[in-house]
Amino acid sequence: MNSYDYIFLVIIGSFFSGLGAVLQRSGLRVKPPIEIKMFFKIHEVLIHLFSSPRWFIGACCTVFGWSLYFQALRYGDLLVVKTLFSLNVVFAVILAFFGLKEKIVHLELIGISLTIVGSLCLAILPVTTRKESLDLNLLLIFTITAILFSLFSTFISTKRKIGKEIALGISSGTLYGLVTVYTNAIARLTQELHIFDIYSWIQVIGNPFFIILTIFSLTAFFIGTSALSLGRAAIVTPVINALAVIIPLLAAILLFGELLFPFGFSFYSIFRPLGITFVIVGTLILEHQKGMEK
Image (cartoon, one colour):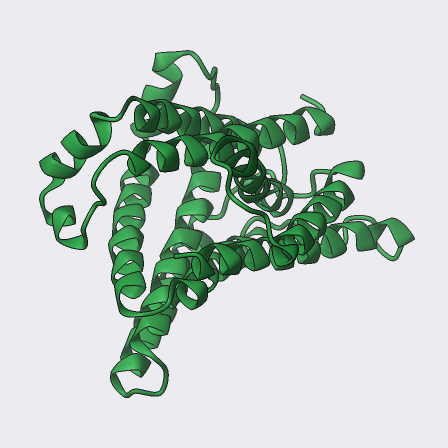
């Protein structure tokens, strides 16, 4: 697979992820809202969700989009793949505009423009710079450090140095970031993967890292839900998403040996950091605006 193949995969994956989000949102509009207390009754939540055909189709689109994203991680740098997958927010906003008749404000147009320009900067000169081997000891150290950072932010909130919702948002975002790190680790360790082959996915699910990934995902979800229940979504959501991007980018450089400036001192080296910056700023603007609407 050449460089442009995995770029194509992650862009298509981000489209299906955005489509899935819109369909799920549309499906929930015709159902009573899910209250926080329902999360402790998993069977009620599942019945509530799966009784909506639109939500189910949206969930399938999301899973398919994630599978393409996972496939792209096997061949491309995490710095590029993770950042490009943020296009799902752009696709969701555009599809919601046409499908759900939601308005796009000027601030969102700025966010969309920055994200698209940043994505073009990343896609125009794709190159893989990661190390071939994965240092499991370094992965453990990185994980412990990130968890300690998460716990420290929660501790600080008890001293009322920062708002509790911000601290919980930092913890949730950090754990979501670790989910991406372990997703990348599993992708690197997976020898063969065919998207429509059930045995390939059994191999992925059977990886011990998948259990860790699942624990981090569920914990991040519940902490994030608590943060949103305590504070404004316009503040909490960008905090969660910022950490969910920053942690994997740090791991890409420190853990997976990827280069932020892949072409040395060449002019072309600025495209990768510039693209990453534009995409992060653009998606944070979109997430902030989305939070303002809640």
